Picture (spheres, one colour):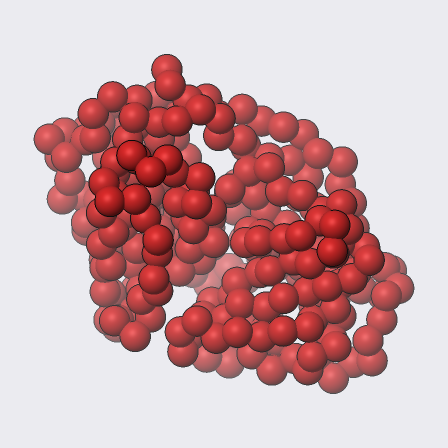
Length: 258
């Protein structure tokens, strides 16, 4: 085996952070920068790590009181980028209109607003270099997929499938020449349905050669198609692949498996 997935437990740390920058990458996808002394020392070992962000009302007075921050509504996100010495953390958010708590906050919270950040409490760490890569997800999996892509070697080979609403929601991914990126447009269809159809269409002949690392994450309905492809048709070892629902339609409190 040319690579290994191993679990690394982490001490759970709760931090306060201040919103300092907002950068729209598409009309429905935004990157926020958080800063603060509590973020010094922050680290994320696994590309698929989860942290919990605690939101307060956007018009609430800024606070660094951890008890106050922990009282807010929370959601899980994958850290995108950070500077542990400077105390900087970048997170990316999918915006679904005015629905939910996190999306409206990410869209409208004033610069200077504060959040609480807990974790990650553990990491699933990829070490070594797979012979082939297979990454598939919807917008919610983009931060993790971007992180996996960033650690690919220049001679990496594989495929990336990303489901979004339409062409306006596509983003630029800097992948090695041997990695093909395909954007899957769902239009008005339910989230995950277009990507599931793509996974269902792939056969054993589409399997990359050698030791393959695979990551599939989107709306929870993707799990069936992902497992059928990776474990049944491609016969991958479940210990060397990740298939999970990042969110579940109609369940705001759904927790993605870690």
